[in-house]
Amino acid sequence: MPNDLTPHSARPGQLLARGVCRHLLSHDFVTVEELTPTPGLRVDVMALGPKGEVWVIECKSSRADFAGDHKWQGYLEWCDRYFWAVDENFPTDLLPDDTGLIIADGYDADIIRMGPETKLAPARRKVMVQKFARHAALRWQMARDPGLTL
Image 1 (spheres, helix red, strand yellow):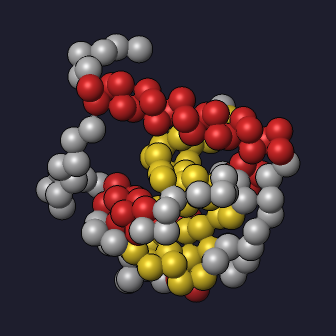
Image 2: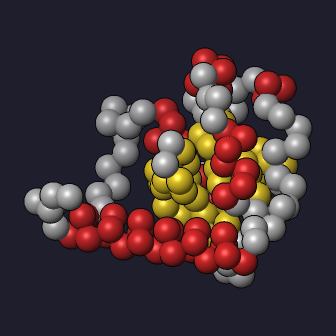
């Protein structure tokens, strides 16, 4: 998949997601963007850890972006840990204290606060790992065959 996200070609949330994905790879987590765990929900970044951990990261580029998100609590049942990713100028006091916090830019990120761990049930974990794998494989296939239509 092309990685041509520059300030001119990407939205702020996409740049945050790129920095988050780069940082999580340094912790041996692989990531996919815009995964749908269930109809009506689409997470910005889902990360799969080396021990099968499932993390969800929502990227918020502004106060208005955060205020307009009324679905985020629905993501909690689809992951072991939940994080917000924001830039260094975001008013982090708006974010719930019982969630994780990542400060990011288009190039890297730092985990400031770990979200509390709430382990997925084994059946739910299996579903999420399968969704992750299918999503990643489909993205790769589409990158290799840009003319592919679904």
